[in-house]
Image (cartoon, rainbow, N blue to C red; front, top):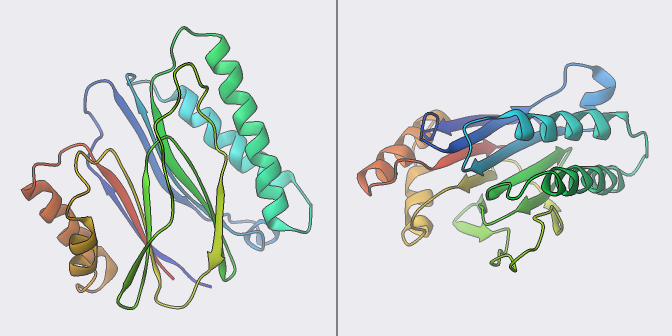
Length: 211
């Protein structure tokens, strides 16, 4: 299934803040058969991107090296490696800062989505807007990790929306459908950005993906 994506990058340059926002579509034919990734990761209290970049490198390297036929199993095994990397990083520092984000594996007509911290993810299908992740406050002293995987079938014209670092979620269930009335997708993204800036949001990041 072909995808169309729009990345809305607003938080670059915000003090004590690093964001990775990308859609990775491999060039290698064999790798393309194993899907693509939408990646949105926000690391607070740092302007250095080395750790987040190393997580993304591990994700891509370990997933596409894994030849397990079942793609969900490959994804699960890759997340084990990511979580171990986070634990090692945590042990080497007094604090690592808050990490929030979503990684979505887009494979054929399926999406497998995992999150860390308290990001937001929605699927727009027709007149419905479905919330895809449930987040909770981390327990004191708990190492952040990628745990729950949400899986589902993707249909033509579905739109996946990933968001992080929003100060308020109060109007999202109105703002997202209203923005998606605009076409093509980049116009929907621009409309959403205008709405959020008008509401005083300055540091949020998002990616819209239409299938």
